[in-house]
Amino acid sequence: MTLRVRLIAGLLALLAACLAIVGTASVLALRSHLVSQTDTRLHSAQSLLGARGLTALTRLAPLLGAAGLERAVAPTDFVIELRQPDGSVLALAGGDGLLPQVDDVDARIASGGPFTLETSRGPYRVVVGALPGGLIDLVALPLGPVRDTTSQLILIEVVAGSAVLALGGGCAWFLLGRGLRPLRDVTRTAVAIADGDLARRVPHGPGRTETDRLATALNVMLAQIQRAFEERARSQDRLRRFVADASHELRTPLTSVRGYVDLLRQGVVPPAGRDDALRRVQDETRRMGTLVDDLLYLAHLDEERQPEHRTIDLAAIVRDAAADAAAVEPDRPLAVHAPPECQVRGDSDGLRQVVGNLLTNIRVHTPAGTPGEVSLDVSAGRVRLQVRDEGPGLEPADLERIFDRFYRSSAGRDRGRGGSGLGMSIVAAVAAAHGGTAEATGAPGQGLTVRITLPAGPSGADGIAISSPSTPS
Image 1 (cartoon, helix red, strand yellow):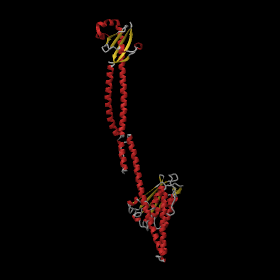
Image 2 (cartoon, rainbow, N blue to C red; image 1 turned 45 degrees about the horizontal axis):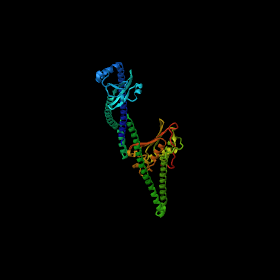
Image 3 (cartoon, rainbow, N blue to C red; image 1 turned 90 degrees about the horizontal axis):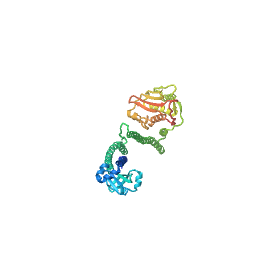
Image 4 (cartoon, rainbow, N blue to C red; image 1 turned 180 degrees about the horizontal axis):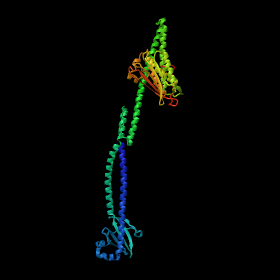
């Protein structure tokens, strides 16, 4: 049974119970009122009987007859009977022989109140009294009209109640159908999502009803679930690419090392070339060591640990890194714009590697003599480190993936110039670990600008202390 049917059944049952209670109360009230009116008429008739004089009535009875006495004493629906001292019963009106059917007449006379007498001709409302001269009078009215009136009321209430139930059931079916429509939409949406349509949402109105608010809340939850699934899919895709790229990056130097070792073991390399072969083996093992160090460092950053951190001077780190770059390549113009001091909270080794990687990027991926610029400033509680060059720049597709692990642009795939593809990934990871961001802008022929934003210290937001690998990328 559906929720709609159960609700309608419950509403109709409640409505029927209310109608039954109201109908029963109205029938009982009407019957009590009609019986009360009958009792009043009985008392009035009994009083009239005493006022007109029983002696005269008894003398006129043989002359007037029953019909005459009925017109003289009371309306024709009354039954009036007298029991004389000798025990004979005189019917002044009606003549239904009710008095002999009354049990315990003396007790009825003592109570003085009307009572109901069941006879073969139907129920009567009866009052019995004692009159002077040892006479006993009975005045009665039939309860048939009362019964007919209440029966007619019951019939009317049954017909009207049935009509109300039918109308109420129809209205309830329509209104509940409209009210439960959002639940059916939720069901259809859930089925569609279970079938794989994660973009499906529950339609809803402006949000004034409970179902609209429920639909809004469900849509927010579904959007979060969709983002979680998409992020999971992206994470799995990145993991697959990471494993494939790491395997590729490690396989190449391992192949070279194995090849040189096999040549040396077989004696194929002449004595004059052994030093060069060993040097190549050493270079390849150094490359593998650097790659493994970078991978371990990135894995350490991914753990999001929060060891002890301290206040450091980023301006001093920038000047030291620029001096190291000038020592390696003195002919390259490199401008440095930094304040005398710039305090941040974090790990000095990690931030040194960030600045070093960015400057190494300029040296490796731009032609010799290409100018570079490093600037550092503080604004609105944020520290901004910007490294810019006037090199060949990058395509938009390369800019979107510049911080991906193992990603190298087409211009940087030459192993003689390019690195492992982890340098910029480390830059982004260290910035994120310090509570900051990393972004890159540029265009082909217009150079590359990398901007690192960090919380200022020591009054700004705290960064996170990060361990640094032994060898920079």
